[in-house]
Image (cartoon, rainbow over all chains, first blue to last red; front, side, top):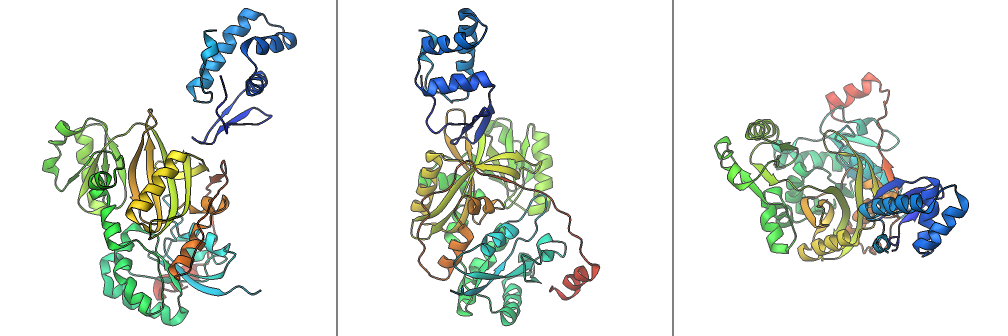
Length: 86
Length: 348
């Protein structure tokens, strides 16, 4: 799964899609996850990073992570969401 | 080095809630790097705000409405030219383009240059002819039908589903959800802009616009796509952002290449949920948001002036993506005598 090329992500959490002109705001954890996706980390690595930093469990992370990917996909910001089923 | 001075006349000074492009065009001309523009405003009404913007407009003359006829307009332009030695005129209203296109040769003989679409291009892209235009150039357009009287309204139900768009031949468009609404908009719009009325299939999707400049030989001199971010009740963009959609740029290049479009233009596009681009309308002049194009690196009015003067222009190859324009309203304090001057003498 990849973030569409040219999607601009600001440090403050603003995503801009230059093809559609739409902007979205994401919270700090969202930005962290997006940056990890950009680094082409897989779900397992992303999960490890988040669990090491925040007081949450794997099940909660996975649920929220898939919800988040679903939103990114809905807004056409990522190329595919194959890891959903992995 | 001293820049050469050009006297450029511009219409569309009505910077109101449904603004004419004139003031934005003038701002672009004032920022031109290749010449120094002296701006002559051409107005139709005494309350057009541009008349009173003395930092942008050097002198204004009122001109007759297109309905007064070509000869009346020519006589007025001759008078203005005697006073101002015009080099270029940039007309900015759809409704005035026909008389200016008709006068292009005569004005050129007087030394006044324009860069307008040909009469054939102007007629062919007309809303009334959009179906044929789409077929001829293989461009996706919404289905539309031209109606001349109210009795044809009832037959529309078998051809179109609701909602449908009711459009005036020059301006105005409303979305109708019932036959009663179609009738009401028919009366309202035809009373203002005359007949015929165009009924158009409603395309669900997101609206985009592209402005640009064609050199009349099929080449794209400039093209900037924009997404409207803030739309007024009249459907006008009050804020927008430059985008980089290759499909839109490709459609624009195809439009310019196949029609050999001459002059500035604005394409109104709708992208449906499947990503298909529909061409809703071709405005045969620069749009009111043209200053965004300047802001992202393409001074289209400046390039248009060079083309009008028969000079070579290098096509723009890039523009900044993600730049926004945000329009605002501004109250000017104007002395009554200025209003009297333009109202009584037709000059300010």
